Length: 431
Image (cartoon, rainbow, N blue to C red; front, side):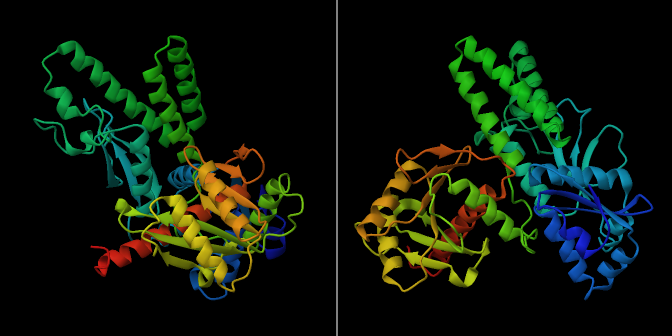
């Protein structure tokens, strides 16, 4: 879709995840991506009032093109591909003379290695990028490696590397090269190269093709009653789906300009099917327990107001009751303390977990004679557990902003609880 470089024109856009391109005479001069393209474009207009670089971009643009994707991961890959193709001048200038970062795959090697690099000219190497954020690249590789393990060692050794022991380099080239059995060696070498081909396909953005291939393979091994292999493939598919629908890679990609309104609107549409009297989402609270080692524990309450984080209302709890051993008992304790305070009542309460956690939350609310909508968010794959009779499970589309807001809250609650726990450890209060 195309819009003019004006506030009125941009405001007509829907809110969506994707890539946007500032153009001049149809030539791209800047490519960006956002989990809310509309909000990001409006922020460009606001920033131009204060920053000469932003003003220059707007003055030299005559149109904006926007491309919707169904996840930020796909937007990241598309952004990188468009920058590589068009070399937009403002993407280059705004790097402040630092070269972009690429994912490098040495495809001609017997065991192709994956590493990070500033762009080179070696024709025997595949480069994916450029990526503007080093953190994004590390996060991409960290997540991809969990799905399709690969080697990042510079040299093949005499023994398997450390990462092979935790499943991130499997099969390990060092292990393969030291095998005596030629047939086994050949089979594992093919398996390793197949993983690399899948990584390449993933980085090319061919996720749907990859998923389709894996589903076909899953069907085949299931028909053959090879259930162990079937479980392995199912886990790969779930991890891949989680990666391809993941919302937050870039911590600096914040939503604003009515993105919260859109998120609450979509979440309200989801929840009204189960809570007919729910008419607003002014305040949503999400809870998480951090109990590293089960020795001591902390909990967090994060609050979203009108669809955006309200950090001044975040609260942290140190579990005090020595009898609170399980997550469920800890939730009881936290809610008892929460409702003793004169804080605004939430429209919806979210808990990190599945049906057991939702039941505990409902039971705790009942003891306070409160009837509030409760939603749980379970993982692998992400799905919502609705706190009504029979606890139905729903899995909204990955680009549903209401669903993604709940996922964001879950991640934020986990981060906040864990941060408090680590702060206490550093003070020496836990050991």
